[in-house]
Each structure stands twice: as structure tokens, then as C-alpha cells.
Amino acid sequence: MPRTPPDPTALEEIGIRLQLTREALGHTQVMMAKLMGSVTNGQAWENYESGRRRISIDHALKLCQTCRLTLEWIYQGQLQGLPPDLRASIEQLMVRREGHLTNRKSRS
Image (cartoon, rainbow, N blue to C red; front, side, top):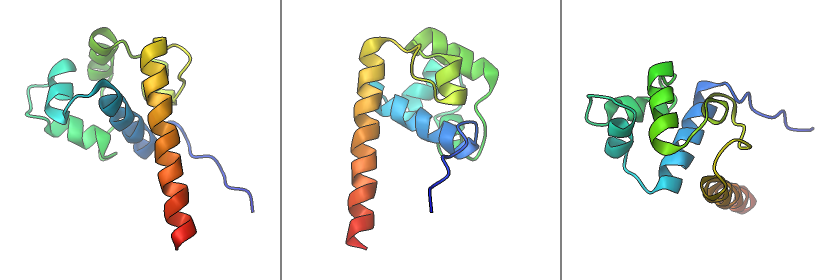
């Protein structure tokens, strides 16, 4: 049976993209929280990354300014508008992650 692709606007999918972005940039959750203008010590970012809460538009816009992201990437998963270096880093992480998941499934 063909697998239905995940909804790119789902909280979990947005969280995965935020985690990929953070890893591609080489930042901690605390640093990402600061970059998006949060006054928390990383808790807001952790909530976004884990898919517990949807990232606010204010925080997303700040990340677009400070980290060269796009709203299309954050909310819809569209890589096209990202700077080439950041896009390449994120794509590399996505391939590694997919390979890791495939290897885990084949061992089961």
C-alpha cells in the first residue's frame, strides 16, 4: 500500500524542519531561541521543535531575518527559497535521517 506523504503544515513536520534547520546551522536550542527573539532559555524553541506548539509568526519572521530562512520553508517545507548553502546542508541532513530510518526498519 502506498504511503501517504505527511502534511507539511502539521506541527510535527514543522518541528522536524526546525530541528533540521538548527542542526544545519550548528546552533543549540537556546541559541535558536535567542535568534528568534524569545526571552525563554530555549523552552519556546523546544516546544516548537518537538511539535508541541506551532511557531508564532513573529518568531518565524525573526528567524527569516537572522537565519536567512523563509516562511515557505518553516510552514510548508519548501526548500526552493533558501540560500544554496543552507539548503544543501538541510538536504544532506534529510538524506542522512531518511537513511537512518530505513536502516532501523530493515533491522526490525
